Structure formats: C-alpha cells, structure tokens
Image (cartoon, rainbow, N blue to C red; front, side, top):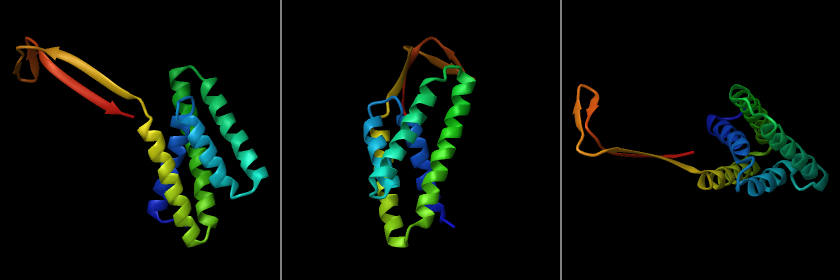
Length: 144
C-alpha cells in the first residue's frame, strides 16, 4: 500500500495529464509520462503514448459542460490509478525517483497553465454592509 504522499503524487500526475491535454504542456507531459510508465521498454512506451493520445481525443471530442467534467473526472481517476499501480510495484528507491519525476512533470504543467485575471473597476467606492456603492478597483489573478 502506498503512503499518502505517493498517492498525492499519483493524483497530481493524473490531474496534470488531463489538464495538459490540448495545451502547450502536452508534448512534454505526454513523452514524460510514456517514458515513466514504459520503464525503458519501447513497446510499453509506445502503448502508453497511444493511451495518452486516446485521452486527449476523448477530451477534445467532449463539448457539453457537464459531460466535459464527467469525462475529465474519469480520465484523472484512470491515470491516477495507473500511476499508483506503477508506484506500488517499484522498489522503494526507484519509487522515490519516479515520484520525483512525476512531481517535475506536474510542475511543468502548472508553470504553463494559463492565468485567468478578472479586473473590476470600483473607483471612489464606498463599502457598506457588504454592498458596493460607487466604484473602485479590484484585481484577481487565478493560476490554474
């Protein structure tokens, strides 16, 4: 059984795979995950590349908001499970190395994630009982 930290790494890895599909981070995570799961065997690595491409195709073919969310959840869980299974079967030293590689891939995806900004102008605002009277400035930045 995996310790909590390794489960968290597998969870983050599954999420990063799904998040990266269709973005600039895709090529890097695609090759990195295939290499990790392939364990040095070219046939296994090729099979993982095909699974990753199938994941991207599934995401791209889904357009309905609720359906997109459901498909994303299923795919994150699928990849999380695959990564957990890999980590469980590795000797401890190798497990730590693979976990570090997964963490690096997750960071790579997060560093390329789009930043969403919301700007509201509340110039000369007066705030009374949770109400905005007048206007002012509010800037929010969300990194996903």
